[in-house]
Image (cartoon, rainbow, N blue to C red; front, side, top):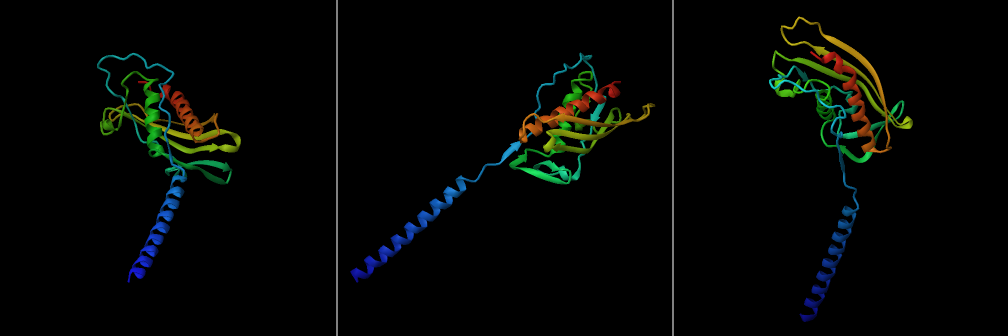
Length: 207
């Protein structure tokens, strides 16, 4: 009986050791899995100082959510590897929806170019006393072989309810060099292009 108990204990210890080795191996594999990088558009302080405004300055413009092509409506950070092919940066994701980041960044840039307090957030979207700006990126591509961010943009300014002015609209073709061939470089170029857009349309938005 003593011999049988000892053998059983040896088998049990061997099985436990094998399981432990397996767990350590799996743990080692998990530790080698690359962590996901969360990417955002850089919201740096604008280079253009906001103009002085009266203390009672009321919002006059709401920036509606920027529209982007369906192929960019993803948490993956995508670029164009050829005219017909899209690719993704590995282990990289947008920290929030790209159209949300573009809208926030565009509002920041316009705030720097219009009288302070002119641009309001979505909280005033339902007010009949503010005009609204809708920006639609028909194309917004990081063409990686060329090191360029390229965009085609359509924008519409709708006057506030009761305003006798007609709607204004325009279409732009923009480009911006991608200075660093990586995902952060792509995000930085996208932010610079969005700022370029703000500079182009701001003169049409001034009251």
